[in-house]
Structure formats: C-alpha cells, structure tokens
Length: 118
Length: 109
Image (cartoon, one colour):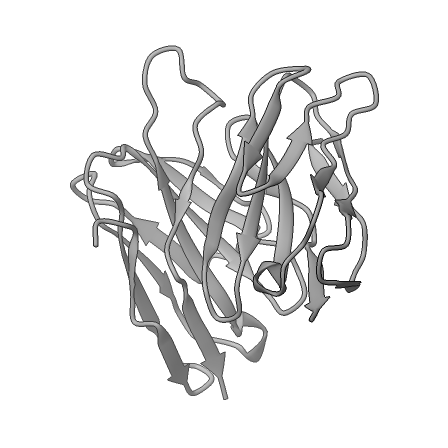
C-alpha cells in the first residue's frame, strides 16, 4: 500500500507526558499537512510543510506542539506536557504541488493517530 | 477569512432516496472545492473536486457543481445505498484546506 501512513494508530498517555507521532507521506509528494479532529467536528489546521520547510503554523497552536520534516520525507508531530484537551484524532495528509498547480491538487489523508490523554 | 459551512446532520434516508447535502463557502481568492468522506475510525477519502467556477465534480454517482454566484458546492446523489452511510466533509483549498464540520449520513435498508 503506497498511501499515507501514520503511526501509532492509537496512543494513550498520562497528562504531562510527551508524545510523538510519525507520518510517512506518499513518496513523491512534496507537501505535508497536519490536522487535528475532535469528535463531531471537521479537521482543524495545525501546520504544513513544503519539502522540509515549515510554511505555516496555526496561531491556535500552543508552544507545546512542534513538528518537523527534516529531509522532506516523513514528518513527526510532538506534543509536550500533554493535557486532556489534547485528546483528538491527529491527521496527516500529503499532496503533490507543481508549477501551475497551486491550490488545485487534492490531499491524501492517512488513517490518523487517536490520542487519549488520561 | 476563509470558511466552509455545511448543513448539520444527521441526515437519515431510506435506500434509493435522493441525497442533497448543502455546502457554502467564504473565500478571499479563487479556491478549489472538495468533498471528502470519512468512515468510522478512518481518515478522510477524496470523493470529488472542482477547481473553477461551473466545474462539476463527480464520482461513484455523487455530483457537485462549483457555483461562484451563490458560493455553493452542494453534494447530490440520485439513489443512495446503505454503503454510503458515512460522514461527508465539504472543503475549500487555497494555500491550505478549510473543512466544514461534517454531515453524517445514515441510509436505512
């Protein structure tokens, strides 16, 4: 399967612990997004990368959240000092951007990582 | 700023009924528009898209037309099946994606 892969699928952690999620995008895709989804809501933007450059980070995102995409391939999302309000599904998506495609290509989503903070 | 508003659910229909899920948007530029579908415990799957005004996206019997004059992108299907039961998200894209809150569809046999 060559789709977007996220690990782990589920994570239960105690409040105050740090967690890290991994996303492997479709191999030729140069753009990678992170979204968060809570029950009954649509995905909420967190951040996105073009190759290894982080181009935007949501202003709603606290400093406890950090994301990297060191070689322009896989990405990690770390949450430090987790809080119960961080419990959500974390979705990764990727897309292929090319000259003249801006804003028209679709994103392909992974199955998500469900985080539960107890 | 950019935003998407879609009709609240759940929508409950009998098999073979006609489906409409309304979606309207607000955008600063000229976005592309998408419908995604999400099954329980899964990520989002692209259903269809339209990249400019008057384009019609279609897939698996679903259709939506990009209406710039009414800033709408309503999803329709002529005859729903039980297997169409899922949550449907309308989205627009400029630099990043903006999603509606989702509409849950329940189709009864």
